[in-house]
Image 1 (tube, rainbow, N blue to C red):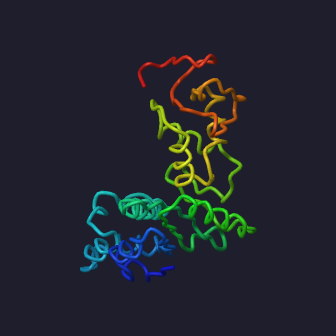
Image 2 (cartoon, helix red, strand yellow):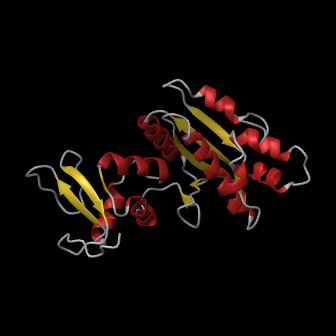
Image 3 (cartoon, one colour):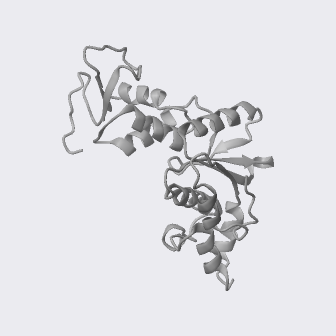
Length: 239
């Protein structure tokens, strides 16, 4: 567990070194609010060097924008930091926010691991302890932070479709996206939404059959994302 002070406590290279081992995991208290204030302080002579050390490169120059509200800047900082962690070999990330009184953001926690099971266990643990609703999932895919719940697949089905539109992929691919980019542990509820909209075609293995809206992994061979009619025929060839 690492708790840097603002944006200058622990450089990115330290975390890169810590997570080299296959069994290593990181839980980082990311002060996106403090980093945002640093980013806006252009009169700080050390600002550029501090931000470059924080993110491990000068990528922040292209990724962060000073325009817009502070909340949007904080989400940009969080997304960029997760993107940087994902450049490390085999690293998967997940993040959530802790909010205090009046829904004010206190801090982000960013979790990094080398194994999907670690991500599953962390998400399960956070859902169990979140009795007050103070934990939330800040996400660039939707306009607002969503409470740490997994009963609204419609909110993330569009993001899943955009990620795989025009592609034919395996269940493992969509499940990994769901695990890393949504509050869900797997993609099945979102896939059911997309199939109901005619945006998904499912190919089963051999002579296997399945019920519409269900996705047993031992029966599904391939998932195709696109615009289909009720018979599963593609209707938009411009994908």
